[in-house]
Image 1 (tube, rainbow, N blue to C red):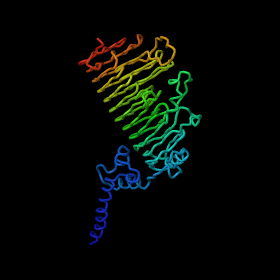
Image 2 (cartoon, rainbow, N blue to C red):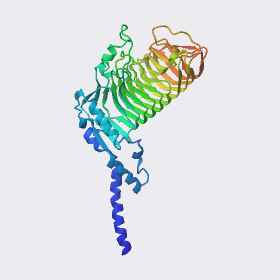
Image 3 (tube, helix red, strand yellow):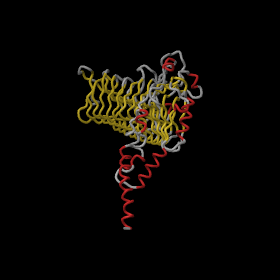
Image 4 (cartoon, one colour):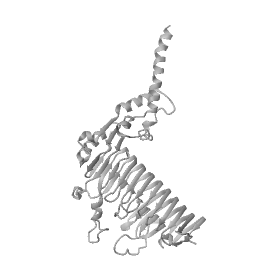
Length: 442
């Protein structure tokens, strides 16, 4: 009888734990956001460590961890701090909301849908107490008042020194760049060249997810990853007019271990620009155009040292761009661009489909000839096909003192519309051709 009395309460607790446990498995934390804000939370946290509970074993420790996570969730809406979402200035409200979210455990900062928030330059600074998610459902729009940027003309929205950050939600970030483009020296030769803000900057962030956002009409660059480690950028739509100056889509510098995937980019400059300090970057499923293509560089400007390595672009479609896949370096620089792969790429009416330019010169005066150069080596072009809008589909213009080493062309088929043949110009490049290559360097 004593054993029976002890067993029955244990059995009741055991049976009651099953629906609680499986309920948590089927309904992850933050599901209540779905109805309130239209968010698909089932995918938001799939890569976060605490989302992996209970995958194989049911145990009291795991259930305890889940309970603590659920209990500690804090949702912070910018509206709760005075933002109206009617196009009026919401900068102070966003600052206060960020401070509240950043100082809380496992928080979600919400920018509600069907609202338009005007922001002056603002920095969302860490470190934060724990992982933090920013859910942008509505529209965040930059102030058109250029004097608002007097303290820093180079950045508008900045996330700095934040770990385990996700910025997502399907909303829009609008740089309101027209007034900046009109006052650019690249549009009006009579104007002196001045800085313009990057719309969205991530600086010194680790374990970063940026996904499902529309970023448009940046003042200059749209998105910049600087000194970051462990980045996943996906589902981004980045757009600006094809004649908007210096409006790179995604810019990467001094960043390691970054994946860019399933994104559509069309701007007035490089769709993706990869510069010094970038290592282990993978770009897949990229649609590019209009713009200047996908570029590594420029590297080595001002006789500087630059290093880029382990870059893979696998799966891209470029349409109507001035360049396809490009490596560009200045004379006089040093360092290296190495272990680079461009694979499975379609070109549609691209002016310079494959190009290495070790004599890049983006200035009014001609650049003087110099003996030093950034070494370009171990570059694979594989399965690249489509059409060129110029006769020269392949241009490898390398340094005579530091010739391009280990360049492989494999299964290349690029022609001019109508089936006419193109040609390759290959100077100071050590090239190996595999499979069918047209046009050929040999």
